[in-house]
Length: 409
Image (cartoon, rainbow, N blue to C red; front, side):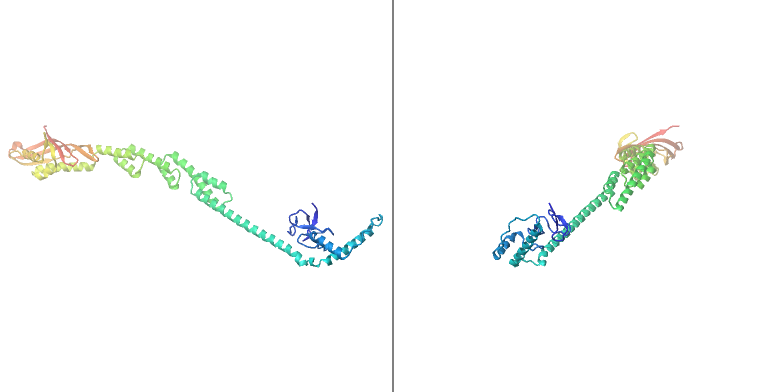
């Protein structure tokens, strides 16, 4: 390896350098050293720019032509004293100069203008510049696409995180995308803070075992991950209160507030049981009206109205499978010979019991007292008689059993 001057700009470089770092011209494998003067020049130049000696490829031919045109004197014997080296060197240099001049004249076609020798250098510079620009554009395009891909991925991860209520997912976004936009990081941090605060409030609501506190928590955090558990706790609190009241109204209120509650089936069973045991005011009213119409019909001896109060077949006094005609016959027997007027009065002391006869179908066992006031042509028959009435009412709200027992005082 040797240090040379760049044939283009004169900058000192290594002869093995790929290109000149100063001007960019190609060096390694593209230079020739002149065999005459020792100067370095580019391969594409036909003459040495210093001594105008042809490149090594054409030098031998030029030298032969020179020998043919002008014979060269035989070399002088080399017996030169040590004191005469300078004179000999000058003589040799003069002789070589003359030879070079003759070589140049003998090969006029090999002369190259300065502009022609510099053209390849300009082309090399232009190609290098264009290559640099292309590389720069490609790098910019790749960087842009990479940046766009990263931005797209960050947006996707942000959308996933912001719709999550998992603190690990939110914190993972912050740890992974530390260079995310400030707006994205602020949003995730705010939600993470809200979730942490919500978790503390959830702990307080859970240990309070208060329906109002749990409802307030759900109001503040309607999409909380603890929503299902909070609803379950409220359901349990309401059921405990409903069970302690143990009324039809309480169970009905529970079903209204919790139509899909954990204890819905139990509430339905309790309501059914209570209804089977409890006579409602409405039921007491229709039973009272039924027997009132029965005795009013006897007072007025209205057969049609009397028949309308009883079932098609019934137990009448001691007769099984009695008919409506049997009921009319009983009424007529009550009006003994000489009785001109009869009035039945009911004190309203009903004792009513229920029994289930089907889905939402009930039968009623009824007992009460009735007072009979009689006016007769026979004064001895006048007076008031007291009876105990035992009866049953079927699911069609008709009298299915009727018995009378006179009370003797």
